[in-house]
Image 1 (cartoon, rainbow, N blue to C red):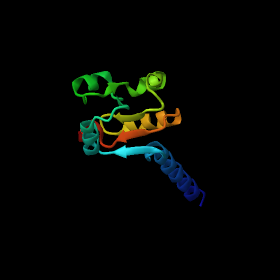
Image 2: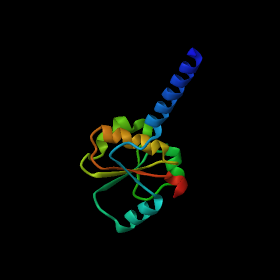
Image 3: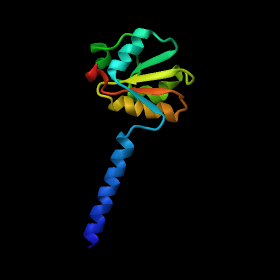
Image 4: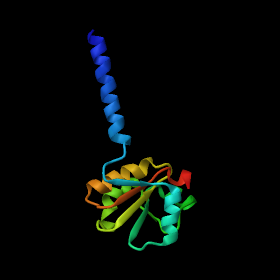
Amino acid sequence: MMDVVINVLIAVLAVAFFWTRFAPAKGINQITTAQLREQLKSNQGGIQYVDVRTPGEYKGNHIKGFRNIPLQQLANRKGELSQDKDVVVICQSGMRSSQASKMLKKAGFKNVTNVKGGMSAW
């Protein structure tokens, strides 16, 4: 009986862990790469575009207008961005940009958007 309780507890903790890591954060917008293309075409001023991949990944291929601030450096470099302007974040697959979006939201950025699928979907 105790084994069952322990196994259930482990399963619940695992689900909770994965949910907090990978579920979309509240207050963070999600857009597709198709929606991003439209947004870039309309050239809306005042939007900050951030690519959180490594410098090597960024150098290999990036979208014009996106600034490279690797995820590992974002906590220290978030001051380079305005909290009052919209921020659109991209990475390779959408995982790192999702983490970056959560970090920015917690840091007080008002309008943060994650690009679903990242550069792989671009």
